[in-house]
Length: 103
Length: 496
Image 1 (tube, each protein chain N blue to C red):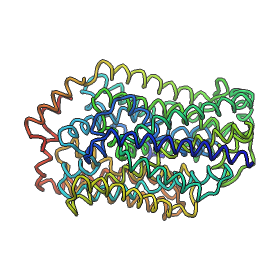
Image 2 (spheres, each protein chain N blue to C red; image 1 turned 180 degrees about the vertical axis):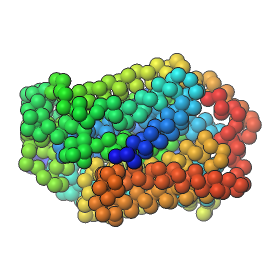
Image 3 (cartoon, rainbow over the protein chains, first blue to last red; image 1 turned 60 degrees about the horizontal axis):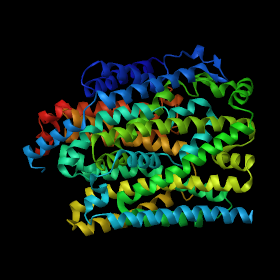
């Protein structure tokens, strides 16, 4: 399994870096980078804990779903108030058209 | 059963006819340009696009494949379609925001247009064909599943499938992207509501989720474990592989580009990416749970019989007319995905390959797209003439193969050092490896294999594909960049 953990670390760094830079190199990027990897692979739940059950469903699944709920809420918040606005994008499109004539 | 067949035919024919009428309505409104045909003129809003993208991706596989995978392998099956949903919204936003801006400046209407602009002429044609090869299993899975539904409804496998395919071709070819989008709104409402009805009935008649799962936990605890069977089922590599593969694959699939090109604003883009993530998460979790409950209700199913779990549950728990209506409703989901794969590939092959070869007029571009759609459906049908693979596995194979374009796409967008040779090498090496390791390598299939050190074909191929991209780009770093590449790094884009 060692090769898997090395692979995971590389992917985590790569994906985290992509998301961090695309979110403006701020705390949003850090939070989303971490959440992305946690959401994709529940490595925060060791195999040994998978037997714990809540309401007929294992705890690992609830915690996994919880990560997704938090992720969705934060993403909604980010999209609505902290990410690139329509006005900014329209300005960029207009600038690019002027610079290149929309070639 | 005769009455059931008539009801099934009526529901399916009703869906087909309403879809065709909506396609015709879109044609009435559409402008006669190729850009309008392939991208709806870039004028659609977030809500319509949300319905459209949900319908495009939620398919038979979401219902039948996830239920079957849940039945066979347990709760970890959510990783294939459900878990990537929310992270995928963020990755799409990170990557395709640039697609959105540049498409407005350059009037792009195919995936290859991005590659042509970034890496130079001819690259788009290669990508169009590679995407066609990569999405063929996905297309085949939808056609195969249409046949399974027809059989479950007591209708003939091939004639029923051909009937549906003819209608799909009709409304897609008639209304272009705008037409399919209108049809998708209608189809999403149908299949989403019917799936929720079946899930509710299964829960009510099986005594509630907690009691069934607690019973199954004692009988078959492996269904709820990650790392069951000594770490072989839903191990960490398997979970990561399926989740990451789906994200990387969908980021490069035509569906992401088509919906980005059709957006009228960035707000619309944000709306459909997030809505899609939430919808797939909810539907997939429900369908996997349905599969797990099915294990207690129909424990004796085996092999490809398990693919028919969803219809079997409907017939077991509902009056026959109710089961028929629910099943016929799933045809709407399959139709939407089929039309999307067909339309996306036709869009790419015509705009990236045929246009370069023949220099056609606007009208010829549209007609060539219509002809391409027919050819693509025929090829997909031939591929699955003899069903060999379970639906979910066909899906995974497709996403894994498409994901091999991830490095050339994101590298081209965000790294000035990316070169044409690097992009070509990574795409060819990655895709060839995925197909080789999934279909030829001993212990074949898209799951983890001891012959691959416990990793999946995707997890082996993805880093090799990335390494190839970066190494070959570095070696060929002195190669001249095409003039269009500069726009990808315009200072005004840095503020986005």
